[in-house]
Length: 190
Image 1: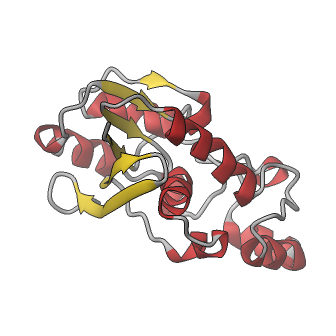
Image 2: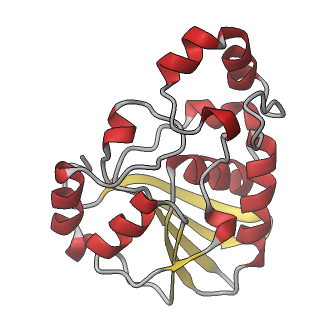
Image 3: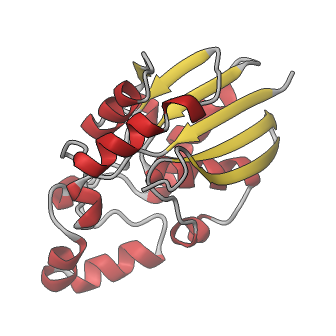
């Protein structure tokens, strides 16, 4: 049986603009407006899910979705780096940041490695029943699901760009997935 997995990345937030780890903040005004404008572009689904972050919840709500939070779809756990900007970490821990960016098994922040994230979301992906699933999830989750589904090398994680309020679609079944990526919802996706 075929499964269709539709992943929507959250709308814009101050945290995204500032390249801040952890996505702890709410949607900003432009994010709320963009999500509200995209309501009619949201595909139909049998199962509505979301990551546990505030911006995933607020994006789902702004899109008119009553989505269930699923821990397997939580953002990458970044440990001590949560709430800090990429620039701050780069300045205070340049070697740790460089290691993290080149080695998918590294977790110098004390949180979860990219490999661990991929295992977590891969188990979720392979457990899905044959149906249409729509999930509002963080960009890291979109990247990890894509890598797992297509059997890509974990090192490609940072080469996948996921813009705000974009739709990435996978269709297939265990071991055989096809990808349609990055369609903006509501026109601009910003």
